[in-house]
Length: 329
Image (cartoon, rainbow, N blue to C red; front, side, top):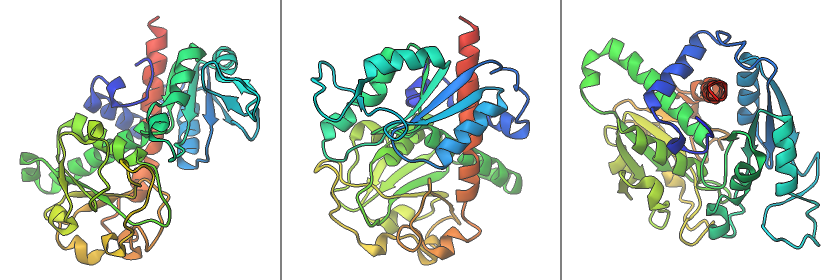
């Protein structure tokens, strides 16, 4: 693995899941792998789970993890090529990134979309410029369109739960689980990153009957959702679901808007009765009693805390594979 930007960087999803679960069973088994190596975690927007889980994962591999909040602790960066820097940007990424590549063995970057210009956001300029100029492997800690570490974590969590279900009911292995990604209300427009990424990974994984449900006009970019069934009737989508992933996103075509904020789309215990006693997932943070009801979040069907805890093992598997690749060179 050279970089980790999307599922396209993973040759075998199940193998990477096994590596992650191996670290969950024995976190320090490769503590010497990252000895005398550094990972630089650059944040262009806030983070809690992504930041902490990546830092912990690197340390468990013996790496030094250094966190840097770009724009708050350093200069405001310019990313456009041939920019005339007469505004508020102070340093160009083509000057900063090569220096960072000398300081660190791996760079991990978290960016965020503007939700104002679809073409700019979906070009993934920020993270692509770091890849172009840094000269070291780059890990996405979320970008304008994708959140691969979160989605990899989601596959890990689903795999764990399926194995547990099979112990109780071996016949459950005979059918693909039904996985539903459902849109949820929110108080403000949110990016499509998590929904795009989850769709991309579930489709690439290929081991689920995958349904996406949302109000009309909330279609995602088809390059991420192709292969999934789209259903505008949430109750119909939820029937016999084994896993429900809850997430808000703003409109893609008329970019970054909220058309509908219908509270009836919030998942609750009544809707859960339509499912096959489905496990509930969410990337966090979550707006309680807006996106998800208390009864769901605090109930026995919630995998959300486990999902968040698994972020460490996802990050550790990815970092370890990049370190192993460096050793081969």
